[in-house]
Length: 77
Image 1 (cartoon, rainbow, N blue to C red):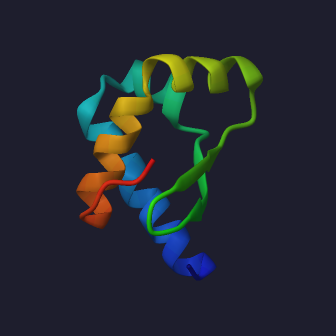
Image 2: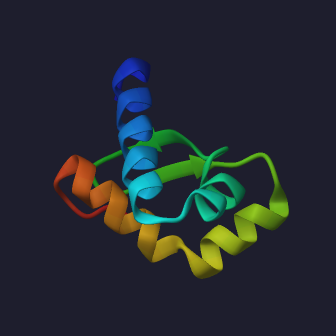
Image 3: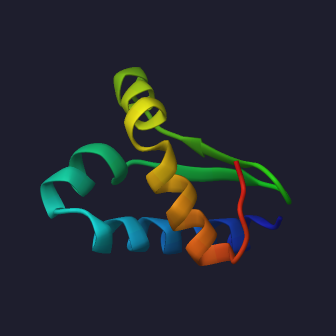
């Protein structure tokens, strides 16, 4: 996927998450999240903090999957 399209998808996913969660939750856990890769069946997100990464993986993976699916129209892991 081209970088511009990837950035657009990433911004759209963040927008869905921002509309889903209270601003304090969004700003704490999701605001610094960046979509760095997307294929037919896999999405790769990057965040600048190992603690946040662990929390996102353990507590918010399903939320990320739902938001991504809403944006791209199919399920990705």
